[in-house]
Image (cartoon, rainbow, N blue to C red; front, side, top):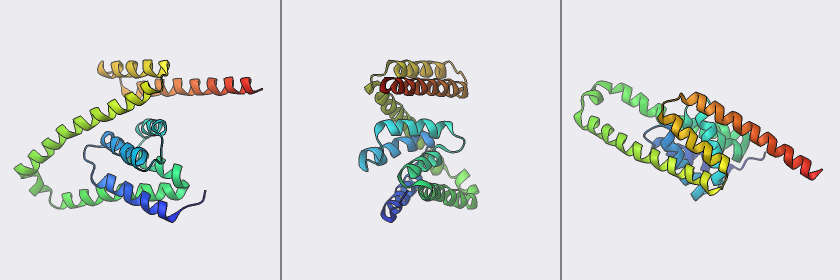
Amino acid sequence: MKTNPKLLIRLFFSTLLLSAFTFGGGYVIVSLMKKKFVDKYHWLTDSEMLDLAAIAQSAPGPIAVNGAVAVGYKLSGIIGIIVCAFATIIPPFVIISVISLFYDAFRSNHIISLLLEGMQAGVGAVIASVAYDMSFAVVKNRDTVSEILLIAAFILCIIEINAIWIILACGSLGVVRTHNTKRRRENASS
């Protein structure tokens, strides 16, 4: 895969800024990645973003890094992975390093405490927005099995079934569906 230096620079700064200004964890960054990589730059389709979010969430490690790595690989191969991973890791590393130097001052500061509580409320709203956007993408495809899986996974999460079991079950079903679809296409073309 040929690498484009301009694309790598754009990838670096896009993922760096997303990582630097995202509070609330991986679910929040998924929404911002969609806005930047799907809506603004058109590097991914809605379907690819949905797949990327599922892979990033189920793979070990932070969702932000996993998502950035997947985008980097799709656009620029191995060098894209390195650029995106590095750009995603820099901001939290710097922020945590600075906070650790002033931990006692931050811990006892009432204004910072209130600020962090306010951010928690905003994080809830962003997560709800991500859930809505991703569910809408599933419903838009008019795939009954995916719609049923979406509702079932939601209900299972509410009744507090371990998310690992839900992910494994949905992933297994996805593998079986993909295999069956491929086999049907091969049989139809021969």
